[in-house]
Image 1 (cartoon, rainbow, N blue to C red):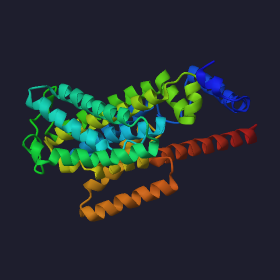
Image 2: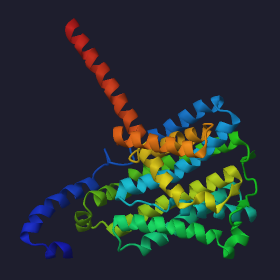
Image 3: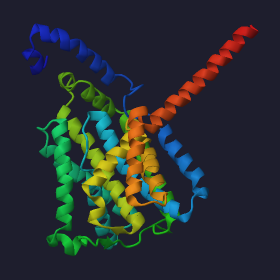
Image 4: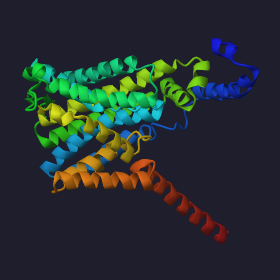
Amino acid sequence: MTRLQEELTDAEQTKVVPRVSRLRNRNEGPAISLPFGKGGLWAPLAVAAVGLVALPFLSSFLKYIFAIALAYGVAATGVGIAFSSVGMLVAYQSATMLTGCYMALWALSSGWTFWGALVLGLMGGIVLSLIMAIATLALNDFAFAVLGFSFAFLAQNLVESPTMASWSGGDVGRTLPISSVFGLKMNVPQNAYVVNLIVACAVLVVLAIVVRSSFGRAAVNVRFNPFAASLIGIPVPLMRVGWVALAGGLGGLGGALASMSQSYVAPNTYDPVLGVIMVALALAGGYRHLAGAILGSAVLWGTTQSLQMSQTNRDILVGFILLVVLVFARDGLLGAACSFLRWTVGKHRSEDLSVDGKLG
């Protein structure tokens, strides 16, 4: 019996202990249906299939746009996975992306390879997110989100400040050395598109494995009832720190990908508004689905950026699409598509059974 159980009254134990038993069974048993990370290993396969099928039909300009959309989708996936697993909203994802950009800049300038720059961007995002998560352990979910948004403002202004302008480039930004992967130059739109697609699919494979592990099952327990989860020995604060760090790492990875695809980084690109956009991408695509944020990025960012219209009209269109999705498809575009597919398959099965019954 734990110390918390000893402090409970008989009435409280009557209410809590059954919940603890259910959570213990869920934590020890196989994770068959989790409320987040839906899609499993089918998610990267679907993203790869759609991305490769679309490749011949995209112009050079669209390949560039959707290469950036894939990078942003990786960062938005981090926001979605942290919120859907342990309920923590990473509102400072723009800061982790900015960190990943400058880690990639330093790595490439120092002669590192593309993969080395990518790993360094990932680690930079993890370290920054760990600092934020550990420093805010005493805060609730809402306070963490608000503080994260404020931190995004601080990070951008710090990088743009005269003190760091000689290194960061200030408002003008910095040009990155052109990186290459297996001899493919990342400043070629098609190469950037294919490489970013491969990285995005690899990220989804890793997340599918993590979600189905004991780490993922424990996150379900923390989200369902943190107090009861602590009674069965799950370190709730450490679980939250772990998932937030994972989200930050994906932000750093996405930022590194985006900067190497553009061969350029400017602090004003990664302002707090971009952090809000990352949340919007995850919500629009369906943050409970592994591939949801990538779909949201392709639709909300990629498609709208490819349209020939002013930035104001583009922002209005993005807001309208997001509003429609949140009202009519609360599980996001991918959730709505999956529901429609299940309904269609169920309808055809019902019709087949009806015909078989009549023939019989």
